[in-house]
Image (tube, rainbow, N blue to C red; front, side, top):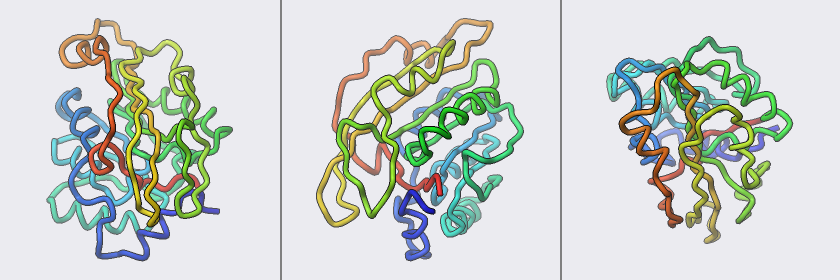
Length: 235
């Protein structure tokens, strides 16, 4: 069973990139935190725009996607941009992957994973992360709910993500909203932009330290800037 509708939509539009080919603002921000050659795991990579962006920055990228149609478009985009990505076809909650990774990333996917499976998913992803590495997610929250195209979502509750990261530095947990009309009905989604860092022997410095200390104001997000629906987990 497909909890997300976007795999079906990818198949219906094989020559169109539903979410575009340019990276999200979130991906651009996180790329600035990573060292050269960092390993990046993109969970629910959809049509590949953020995975390809990370690879273009010289990172070693693995993109996981449950939609074969989405991956075909991702592979085409990578070829057009002249970059290499390890594409993995499968369910993010049931894969076997080798770490460690410097960034585990997901923009608009993990809320499709049932809550019971997320309880196992987060500890596994944390174990795959290098000390000093990051987890960056954008997820739907339960503040504003709109079921789009028959999707099934276990919406994140306040502090749910933060509670899943004991012993990590929570650099950002900003709850926001954006307008959407992808299903033909104008509506809004509420999201949380989450960034955490696994503790490392040395203290935070530079960009990461500034992120940890900043106050994130509430704001209205543009869909193309903040969020990529195209992740399609879990079926």
